[in-house]
Image (cartoon, rainbow, N blue to C red; front, side, top):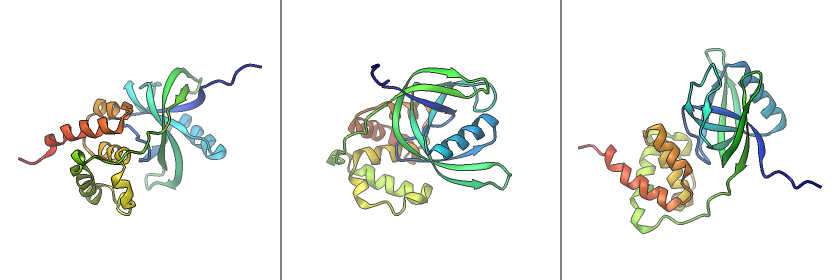
Length: 200
């Protein structure tokens, strides 16, 4: 009997943004290929993959996705004022794309291998300022995290992913922070980036 494949066959949604594990991403769905994808995921309860676009655009011709992305599960639907379908997604595990193929309708599908979750690690004392900076950012930019349990602010992975998604970084920096597998290294990079945003 053949060994089970280590890969998951997944529809991919190349976007101009990065989704981090545990993060929320609202999306506006209007192209037929993505309406069909959302319908299938809603029916089966399965995720799709969000990958940063390396080449191309979100709409039109199939874009080239980054090799590392994040599983996205649909947690809410709504009809937008512009008449389009709106969905809210939540980030799950990260994955690496082994190969992609484009269906006749333009939807990109990938064989992906999911990454294990990062081990929980406490925020070390040298990064003690980062949780309080995150708290201020959440107050102003991310009301959905306002009631997050205090224990999450002690988790290096959670603090790093939330800071990464809230800071106005460029796409390549977002992708690099997503691809790091050590939460403490991610915090170190964020600490080094932060002076760029301090008011003079």
